[in-house]
Picture 1 (cartoon, helix red, strand yellow):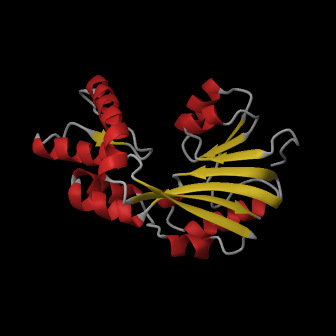
Picture 2 (cartoon, rainbow, N blue to C red):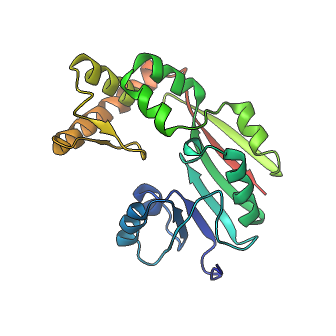
Picture 3 (cartoon, one colour):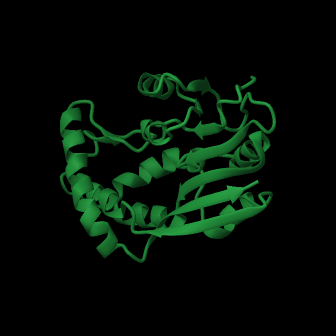
Length: 220
């Protein structure tokens, strides 16, 4: 699949947030048509492609910038995904990558039990700094930043409330991380907003020493 020279940015896992944040024209890839359609409504000028990151239909050296945030943990063969991203990047191209830390996932599995099944079902790989370095060893330059305390209170509080009031049957988390309810979806959205506001204050104080995610900038 040939891409016009006007499209030099690739988004993998094209959530609405990523598409909003990228101002230039881009190519967006996702395995779910539903997410592609929603993103297209917001930014119709982009190119949307249904494909897996492990096998993308683009020529070698197609993109100067790749945005790949909070997707790699959902993939069973992360090295294959990274190698495929490397293939479609131009020499000197930059990869922006973000993944949750193993430390965070272990903490939530222990202290927010309702999240344990979600993490087991959807997160195929856990990451620490050394594992990331190993996957990215082909890149010329890799900068890995530890982010501490980000959004931990949101999920910790959600897990506590769901457990205390025994609401596991009524609320569920989609693979993309959004909370929904078949019966109380409006309440789920309002509940999420309240928790997020509390999280903004509580997380940097109560969880400031816990690594929540790794943010990576890697140059080919």
